[in-house]
Amino acid sequence: MAVHERFPTWCPACEWNLLPPVPPTEARTGRARRRAAREARRTERRRQDVRERAEQVFRLVAAGGSGLRHGASVGAFLLAGAVHLVSLTVLLTGVALLAGWPVASWPLRVLGAVALAVAVLLRPRLGRPERAGVLARADAPVLYELVDRVSAELGAPRVDSIAVTGEFNAAFGTYGLRRHRQVRIGLPLWTVLERQERVAMLGHEIGHGVNGDTRRGLWTGSALNALVEWYRLTVPSRDHEVNSHALTALASIAAKLLLGAVNLGVRALAGLMHRLHLRSGQAAEYRADLMGARLASARDAQGALTALFNAQTLETVLVRQRALPRAGGRAGRSAAPVADLWEALAEATRSVPATEVERRVRLSEREVSATDSSHPPTYLRLRMLATAAPAVDRPPLVLDAGRAAAIEAELAPSRARVAAELL
Image 1 (cartoon, rainbow, N blue to C red):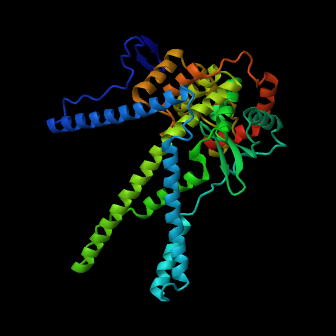
Image 2 (image 1 turned 180 degrees about the vertical axis):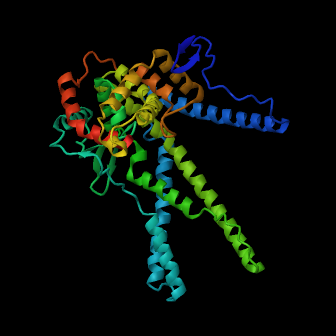
Image 3 (image 1 turned 120 degrees about the horizontal axis):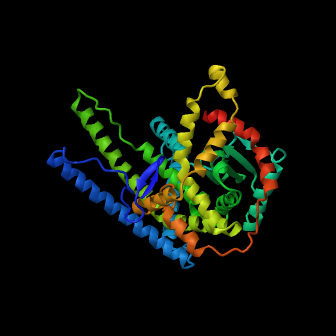
């Protein structure tokens, strides 16, 4: 039995108490029990479907396949083209109606103005880089040097900026017409990682810029955003209006039915786009993991991945820190020393026993859970690193203690700012 006062007690041999206990159903009515049983069977079927598709992609990548030219990727590209064609048609229709074609009339011009407004909503979204918490190169030269070395090792262009956030995560993105490349580092996650795990994390994020991730491309990404806008525009109103005129009431019902049908179709297209993206997107995540392992080691990449299990630990630490008395009341809270927060977070994650990490990994396998719906299940990512990551005698990029201390000094102002925001 794995027993720890902070974590659930469970048995690694038979996996007793691996899952949270299910409330008893004896007190429910027979109909409620049957409904719960049907829902449980549907959930299990969906879980098995996700497992089969995820393991299929795992086998593809483990065998050396990239999936970049797989039929699903081609289908996503063509479907994105169809979505963009519809958006372009709406734009041209609005321009034509406003210009008086085919007939100049005010009702048609009003319709044209509406079409142009819809076209603006459907325009390609290039995104904006994070503005808050951005470090200048002059203020963090050692950190930028590390990120530049990661980019050089992976054959990626240099990043344009580094933003420090309070999220328990890290991210990479390309934004705007100038394709601004930005790395976002969540200080809570950075705090709980070891030095080489930080290198592996940066390798994973920057690797997304060169691993063929079609989800981040302008063509398909903007098409998916357009589908989301179509979905929002076509959601039928839930207001139950009472119209005294029968014809008006029938027209309202017909309009809601038509919008509902369009909304269902848009939702189906968005789901299809997600399914088509799933294969290439998950393959890209595996490749990013392997890039991080190549810069550090498979063990460091696995450590960076399992560290994401500690997001709940951050919430627990924050609750305890917020409950501590602060001198000076509310104003003193923001001015109070913040070192205790980061030390408490680091200590809380260091004290997580190996059996609890193993329980979380097994729980990921049992429930086929992942960081989010676009990522492969965590247990498969860990398995990929264990089986396919190259053996590295000496990592090509080592973050030594001296440079790590210099980076910590550069991050000190950001630590104070983020701690004040979190507390």
